[in-house]
Structure formats: structure tokens, C-alpha cells
Image (cartoon, rainbow, N blue to C red; front, side):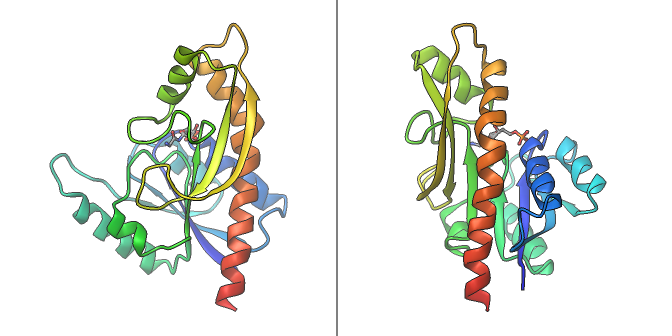
Length: 202
Ligand code: GAR
């Protein structure tokens, strides 16, 4: 049986698109992209999911609402769809230790830097690339890792280095890291973990 994957998104969804494209090329044989959940109703990623015929759900956390309420609703949606594994693909919320413990070695995340550099709370999206440029590193990259209770602290599954060029802006660097690393690593890691979980499922 295929591992049922939910992809959690917040924005543009180019990493989701990379997963969809890989699945269409037959490169995700052990996984099924069964659901896309966004914590942002306006996320373009939802359009990508609809275009690919994947079910979608929006799970919002209103201002002042406890994270536990948001996560309880998220858990209901995931259970209703029989989800086995989560892929965080540009999901800009931190999941609590309690939530993560319910999904041991079943959540993976893509981070746009070489962990342990430029990671942890406050490092997301363009901020990561801005920090790398401000520091002056000459090489950055992307990491796919398991998600545990420490933000960006779970076991590393895959990493790929990307050169920083003299004229880079956060935007040009973000694009190159996506093209040369994230869109390649994430589908491969998703397949690797889906296969492992499928073996456990029998
Ligand atoms: C990606 O670069 C992803 O690695 C990053 O946000 C971008 C989302 O783009 N994620 C984080 O920073 C999480 N800490 P996308 O919506 O086009 O996939």
C-alpha cells in the first residue's frame, strides 16, 4: 500500500510543484500525494494542488488562538484523510513538541540553508538567504530533515550545497537554492521516507 502523504504549505508552493512533477514522472512510487493543507487561505500552493487534482484543506490559526486548538483541527483533518506522513514544504508555522511526538519519523521539512547554519526560530523564507548574504558565506544550500521538537533540529536526510555569487540578492539566491537543491532533494527524500513507512505498514 502506498504511504499517504499530506503536504503542508503556506505560500507559493514551488516545492509542492516539485513533488507533483516528480510524482507525475513516476518518481514517487511509494507515496501518494493525498492532501495539501495550508495555514493561509490565499496561498498559491492551493491552486497548484487543485490543478493537480489533489484534495485541499485550509487550517487557519486566528490571532490569539492557542496553537493547541489549531493543531487539534489539523490532526482531525489529517486523520480524516488517513494520512501516514507529512511533508512541510514552505510551511511557515512551528509545530509543537506534543504534535510532533504523535508523528515520530513521519514529518519531513525542507529548509533553505545548510543546517546547522541559518536555521531555527525566525529563519524562514527570504530571511534565511538575507542572513547568509549578510554573514558573507560563499556556499549555502538546502537541507531536508526529519522534524522533531527542536525547530530545524531533527535528523538530516539530505543536503546539497549551492554557490553564492558576488551579485546575489536574497531573491536570486533563493531561486538558485530552490532550482539547484530544494526541488531535487525534497521529492527524493519524500520517496525515501514513504518507502520506509510503506515497509512498516506492510
Ligand atoms: C522554500 O525556500 C522553503 O525551503 C522555505 O520557504 C520557501 C517556500 O517556497 N521554507 C522555510 O524557510 C521553512 N523554514 P515554496 O512555497 O515556493 O515551496
